Length: 385
Image (cartoon, rainbow, N blue to C red; front, side, top):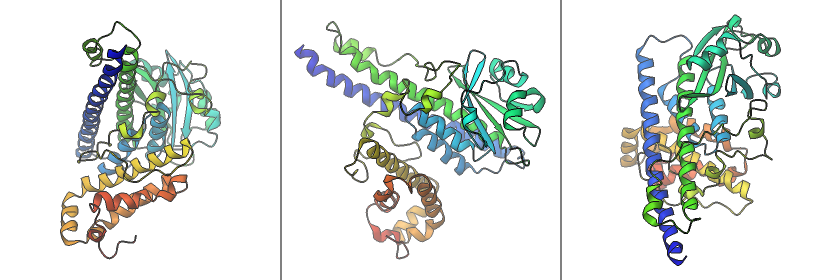
């Protein structure tokens, strides 16, 4: 017993270090592939609806990667997709059945919950069986869905399969709205769904590996070499496995019911989380500012706000490296980056300005800490603090 007592923390520490190392690599790979697709899309003949910039799409992918639970990731997917389509809905797939979870842009969002798409509708059949994006005319869509929620004014909609381990785990429905031929940027939607699929798999692997040390410590016959040998190839854990077709993800939308597939990751300490991939510098061991004493749910909001502020500032540095270097040298960083800073500030305020985290002023703190390297004079005389 005493041997296991001192070995278990070693195993847990090594497993955690290896896991976080691979997670960062996977984040890099996801964004690298997404950026390659963006460049390919830009090189191709653009459609009138395709007005997304590569930086906006990279930011959207990073917002999805902030999520540490199934609910957070899928909600971020819907929020980001709503920037590229007038109406968005997510349907969880079990076999040939697709049941509604949440939507954006619909006048009756609650009616989407547990709405069962017609499994025989041609567009639904093709998206699930062929695992391809379907650009479908209204005639190929679920007629009851169109009757209840309204047909798209353009006469067509898209169904995008969200794949996990080569299986369709969900369908994302997108159209341009019912009043006019509104926004429907198919290329951007495909990239966001692709990035979400990859990130759900990464988080599923993280949860599985976090379980390994605890499992190893329950058996008196385990030894340290065998415990470590079990960690490199964890079994894939389907984050949608707990949801029955009849209720889809309604349980996930309820605060009283936990999400088994991702809850362990969501409860992990904030210090163990890697910095989103947009950062080009090492992750600091401590949070940029102290989280105030507060109820657990409020502390979680504070930590998420800190991470989001760090993400936004790291993105500014990534896309403006030359300006950052010159601004630090001449101590006029704010003037050179004013547009990028204020745009990111608006994004931060929209997300956390009306939450308990607003008192932390984390975005401003991160500008000074990271962008100006803790020297506020580098920001220049026009920087308000």
